[in-house]
Amino acid sequence: MKLIVIGAHQRRDDVEPLAIALPAGPLFLSAVEIAADQPLGDRDLLLRVAKIRGQLLDRATFVAIRYGFTAGNAIEAAVKCAAQIERWMRLLDEHREHVEMTLKVAATSAQPRPDRRGFTSGAEYLKALHAATHGVTIDDAFRAAVESRITPLTVEHRWIPRDEKSVEYVALIERSRIDDMRAAGEALKRECPHVAFLLSGPWPLEVFADADRE
Image (tube, rainbow, N blue to C red; front, side, top):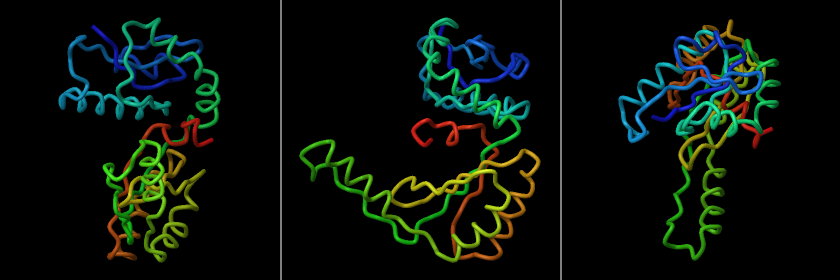
């Protein structure tokens, strides 16, 4: 058997009985147990973990751990997470009443994806891919509408180029403002019907828990 670790939580009762609670210093890791040979890409498993993530978030905000993080037992899971525990504690103390929501926007000027065969090194290819991703733009009026309607609802927000065809607006909001965010999304549809976008969430702390973005 092996464990898929889902997230980091402040309290054991934020986790049980929806998932297994693994002690990790003062925090608890949520996990599900699966057969050692079960493929992580199995569709039923993905749906199962996604459902549990949603149920856990309904209880309390947690720090999401990227899908695919596995451990053989509770001790191994705690050891693998040890370097992050202090930072996760601070995040959960600060953002326990916050959740993330994302607004993915289709680019108005999608960049061509670089052809890997045209580069002699992986580093040069990644540099070109980064340039293509960060070269995308979205409708100026739509961006202004997002800043006007949605930004005032947020605690923090970030515009993030996701790929060569889209940009994502990630918002950190109070749990009490989820319905307000959805209403703002409906208003954006009416105001900017020419722009393709998807508002989704709520999600646990993920973008705002990413150490590389601090």
